[in-house]
Image 1 (cartoon, one colour):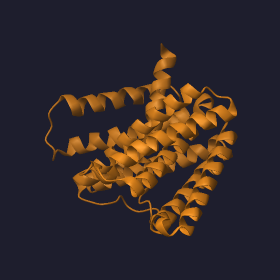
Image 2: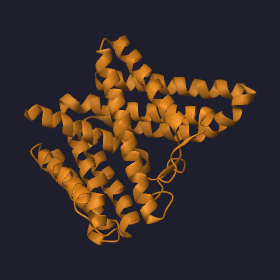
Image 3: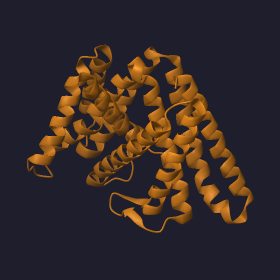
Image 4: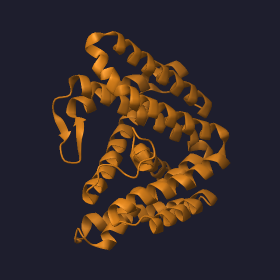
Amino acid sequence: MSVVQIAYAAGVLLAIGATTIAILMMVPAGRKVASDLVGAFGSLAITAAVLIGVFLAGPWALMVFFLLLAGRVAFEAAQVRLGNGYVLGGVAVLLTLGSVLHEAVAPVLIALWFLAAGRLLAVPWADNSKWRAVIEVLLFPALPVAILAQGVLRPELMALMLAIYVLIETFDSYALVVGKVFGRTKAFPVLSPRKTVEGLLGGTVCLVITAAGVAYLVGEPVGLACGIAVAVGVLGLAGDLGASRLKRIGGVKDYPVVLKRQGGAFDIFDSWIAAGAGVTAGAMLWSML
């Protein structure tokens, strides 16, 4: 699929979402759920429209967008984790600039990403260590947002990166609706108390069905689309929980707010950053084999 086709598909999904909310508003039993969804849906629609517009505008617009995004999300994460986000915000901008200007930088960033993860997992480190906090912010989001930027600017991956964003938001929307209607069992009581097992399972099933339907209509392999949908859902959930973990350690509810209903830029894009960076890293490593 092309970027334009994915933009059309996203528009159709947004229209379906708006219609669903309108129908719920007309049903007495569904009005409360619909009222809870209106604000979140409005913020989602604004964010999706801006991002899709940037993709359609082309590489230069994407480059500027990612430099701003990298600086903002790293600033937010470091502000919460360290109390000062300006230095790491600047570092993230430089990493992203290097990644988008020269594709040879991306494999280095991927290697550093894996090394940072290995350092935190394999070697004990005091929780209150400043250097541990720095590496945690580099691990997520500073390095992955720079890797995602490289994926977005690669012609062969650009459409896939936008598709991943659409899949992430579709999964979150399905999980939110199913969780509000059927959710009873908290999936992550400490890291993300609002997520339920029922919501996550329902969101996954609905996401796979949607991905399969869209793939069938546009003539893409249905099995591959379903596999990508599941992988994106898992990676996106990991990103969401990773961002939540930093907030819990920092003792805050939200990152510095950009949109009232969705929080900061890191709150908005955390799942996409994780999933997009993971898929970009996987594609680049596969191409080297």
